[in-house]
Length: 440
Image 1 (cartoon, one colour):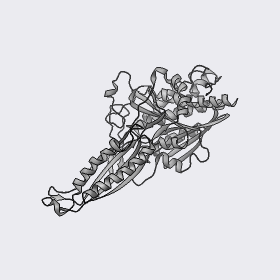
Image 2 (cartoon, rainbow, N blue to C red):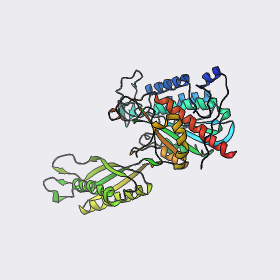
Image 3 (tube, one colour):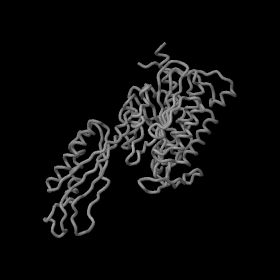
Image 4 (cartoon, rainbow, N blue to C red):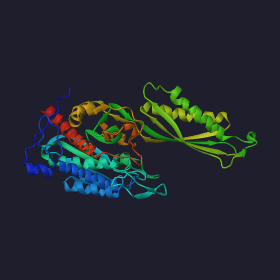
């Protein structure tokens, strides 16, 4: 059984406490809380980043802002990891574990339609086109919260057991075509090689929850995300004489229908849900010409890596044999994306008491499975990980009416920032406190 987390009381003059970000010295019963001054700085960072969003692998300004802040705190800072990533290490004054905290930095090719005074008017290039750019998924909040946590934790550095690795990650939304990026590339470039953390923790803001509410889940939380392409090859002929060739359009329609039986009939969905969806069909140029090829594209989402492998195999078999039955051929290409984001059950159990104390037990709930994907999964595949959702929809707003993440109307209640910062801080302190208690 895990020992009860310990807290540390910091004795410091009131004036110094305010300058360092303290609202009051932590007691044995109360969690660490940030001052109103630090909360305001976090809000200002968030608004600045929101007004200057940058697309994946192009987070130059954001990375510079983060690196400057971390350097001013006196941390060991590395930059240009996975193109624009920033990693900093805080060395605690006492021996203990190393905890990694992660925030993603990139924005989306979305034109903002909110009326906030700091709304983005930025534009960028996406797939060869000029597009509006917006923090429509809340990564601006993630960065600001982790910057605030870094400032507070640095102020209690001498009392900390162990070290804190701050990971500011680019390209969570996916690297541009032809480029690598994100968590996978940061790991490939060795951020865990010299000093592998004992655990990694992350927060994602979520419009499906009210401000300050926390959604957690042991085990799988978010789905894997994979893209597939199917090239269905036939033989072109006149539309009035279909027997003169091989119709890839008919073959494609049969493939689409038959693929639906993979989830409904061929895998054990009592183990975990799965989704196979087609999102794109291209073929033909005229109403009276049967083309020689049709292109299909879609996505696979699922919560079990074994079932994922089965779906890959069955998708290929189903497409190839269905096409063959019509005299056509199918070439299937599966592009593996993000793995399942799965939370370590022991780590979640260990951090739940802390989460309750910070957010309030009435605001912490077990989250449903989410078919969206997150490349935090790569970090959590290397070390025990915990990823939670932080609600950002105002308490008086119906969640059903709240614009979703990725919407041009996406809105975040900034009151949630304080909760996010304090979660990061107290997770670190309590995890370290468990270490010191166990060691003694």
